[in-house]
Length: 151
Image 1 (cartoon, rainbow, N blue to C red):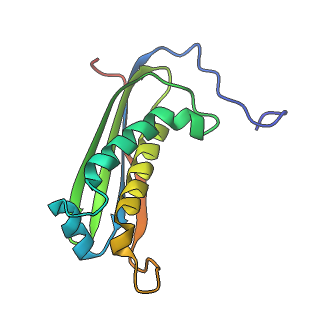
Image 2 (cartoon, helix red, strand yellow):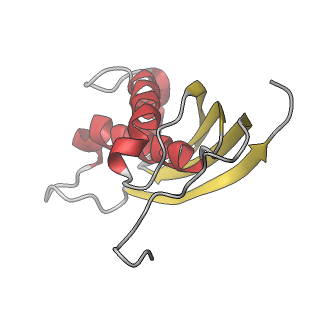
């Protein structure tokens, strides 16, 4: 901590290089909810497309959400999904050519994609008391960070 509180790390002397970060996370759902997502039968609309857009917007807005993150020129965002009987996993890959990494952007993208999925399916996830006994977001993590390499 700085004597005056917190500070953004000084990075002006660092070289700009290609940087990539991949993050993953999981949302636990009822089996019937996962089936509805896969079949495109969720009342609110296309869950996966909405989550992809939400993740991309979140990546681009990360410095506005996390105070000490540097604004970065995002050069690419990839959002993919993997299905399990009672879960959906989201993977977000973020690329940039910059002086600092994009791990926080990837984690933020995953988090918002998972929150968006929850929002899109909450009507079918609620129990008779309006609670969410099954639904939970878990295992958000960075799975890979790459600094340098081909551009």
